[in-house]
Length: 89
Image 1 (tube, rainbow, N blue to C red):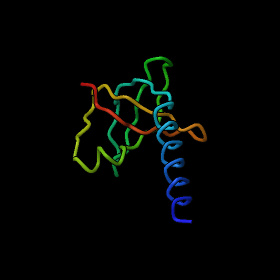
Image 2 (image 1 turned 90 degrees about the horizontal axis):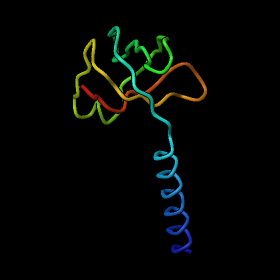
Image 3 (image 1 turned 180 degrees about the horizontal axis):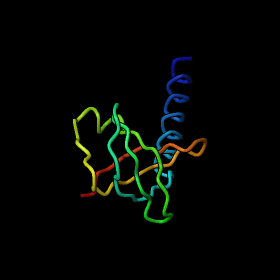
Image 4 (image 1 turned 60 degrees about the vertical axis):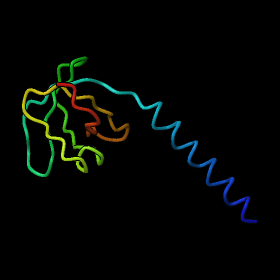
């Protein structure tokens, strides 16, 4: 019984890792810094502003994002928000 549980947990972890790797990322420039680690980011591919929040690992390691920084974003498929996953410059 215990080996079945371990096998199913391992399969779930592998499936989650595949989802993370297949997410599409875009690059943008931070235009405005808002309270609570929110940012207005102008996407390079489309000339529009989008609301973005800081990813958990970036919060954990206190990585600062300033106006004018180029950032890598993962856009949420359900809404207009994006997650900042990497600071490029």
